[in-house]
Image (tube, rainbow, N blue to C red; front, side, top):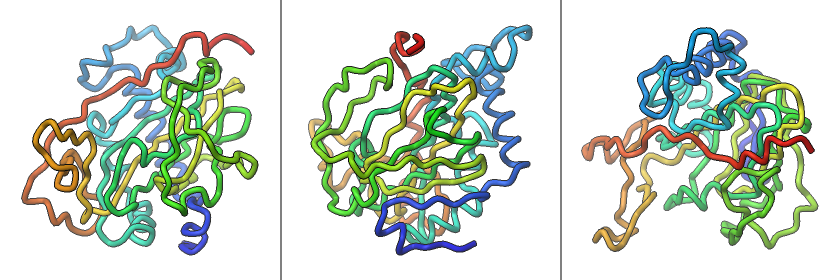
Length: 280
């Protein structure tokens, strides 16, 4: 596997095709259906009637957060050996994962406005890295990822606002104040993994095709860095010492393993405005 670390450092993202095998892809797709049909015990996802088709079942969801807590298949994908190998080169030998997100993104479902993942998941050493696994071919028409190359390099977090466009984007805010002129679409075949820096500006548009754009996105960071996610000073914890311990070790060692793991994050169904499903 050829890995251009310097290109990643320069551009803030790296596209590796064929990292996930066709057999693994099929297993992940089947498992996505199982999750959406409520076949895993989960309060947020009720079991569906047997006469409901798989397409109808998965069309109910835009995104399910933390699927690795339900499914052993998704849990294995979080620590996929080839993904772990890349992360060990991009981040360092010790890597932990703190979030997984299964985007179903059926036809007519919205995308996400410009944002930086670091805005939501702060890391102490700027090691936050997304691993975006394409379970289907990602195209402009079905709402592929868009990035602004090099936008991560300053380490600046752009302010956010309400995007005011619920037919294009989901509920999350929109980063603004920068030049979008150099934005590029990241079209890629199924089985591709896109790695991107937590400060990289990126977005996706509405799925205007008749096909699904399923993606499993996992977020990783250096295991030696504390994670002050959801830290609140009113709780008496200084942000510099806060350590969100709901993590999965992916590579190397966890120096804070003696603290154990705390199951804090629950399954979350990502909301969106129903008006997004209206035809353009």
